[in-house]
Image (cartoon, rainbow, N blue to C red):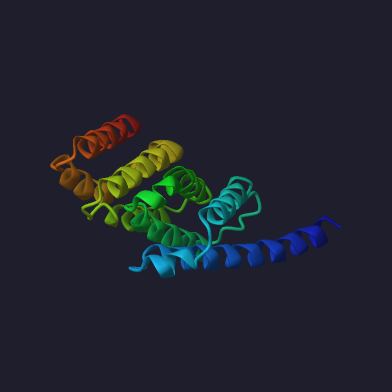
Length: 190
């Protein structure tokens, strides 16, 4: 009976995950669209926030290892696209749910290679002129490193070039967050 229920739930989980990734991708496309008319035809912020909350809870309660390597990579790739939209004031409301969802998805694996790829995708978003995007990415990095704990040492070679770049940012908030991330990495690896 337990196996039957597990197989049924896994099928539902796969359907939900596919739908979630499609919805978030379409939201990204409309959010990054140049015309306000095109933007208004996309999914509402409330729907995307609700779906991301569900995705976050799926990651939190993933005891059956549902998030395979492929699902992890696609989830991170899709969510990283949303960071570009955070630069717009309308989409900055996404920052909180985006940060917590990304952190929980990183908690579904202990594979250092996946962590490195995901962190690289996240931090490439800091190469923008939008302060809010940089702050969102650095805040997420801080949460992810806190979640990973002392195993974060494997990420230092990938993270440091981005942090060093952000030490010299024009925004004091970005610089402070970059320094805070650096200190956290030092604390976790010593």
